[in-house]
Length: 243
Image 1 (spheres, rainbow, N blue to C red):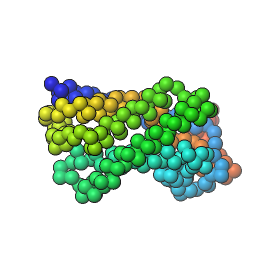
Image 2 (image 1 turned 90 degrees about the vertical axis):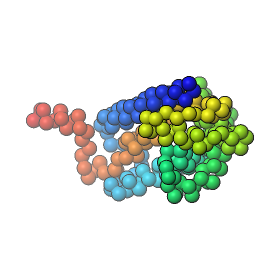
Image 3 (image 1 turned 45 degrees about the horizontal axis):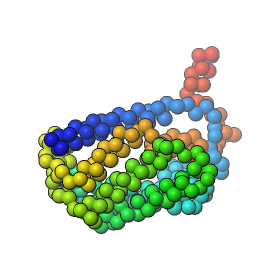
Image 4 (image 1 turned 45 degrees about the vertical axis):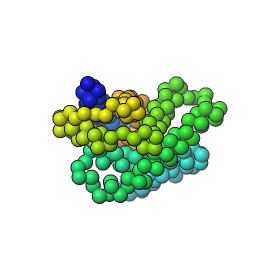
């Protein structure tokens, strides 16, 4: 019964996650950018824009310039999360890819650094007055959700082990529409329930800022208004209708 319930939950949550993500990305892509508003100093070539976006996505450059403590906690969390997600590919591949097997020990300890990064971000919302003023209950709940996922995952590794082979068979079975038995361990149930919750809320929460940065005109525009007239798609259409 538990296996079937979680199989249905994961199918529905994954569907909602993919559809919601595509909907939001499409919404970002269709949002007009009528003005030339790159944050200066800005690159003047496409290559420069690519380099700037790379620095922003990989190193969080603007956050580094704004606040070192927030940058340290945020970068630690995101880098650790990436490593943890890559480590979990072992549950979806058979045989496990070589590089995924290689990062297993690093990914295990990345769970700890992920929790530390989240703790730093939460302390910032609790004790920095100007940040606490603009924080909403959902901001705290998102952080608690992510911390719960990290803590329950680490607990299964260091406190009460679960049958990871059975867990892997369950997820491989999901991918082939062949439901396998899922261990009924309490920590695993808590961990998977929180993951399902994250999949459901992710496309509709502030957590979706990751793809949003690619559509930010202050980051993805060239600083060339003197060389080229900026004309948005809808404005070009209006001009063509008048002529």
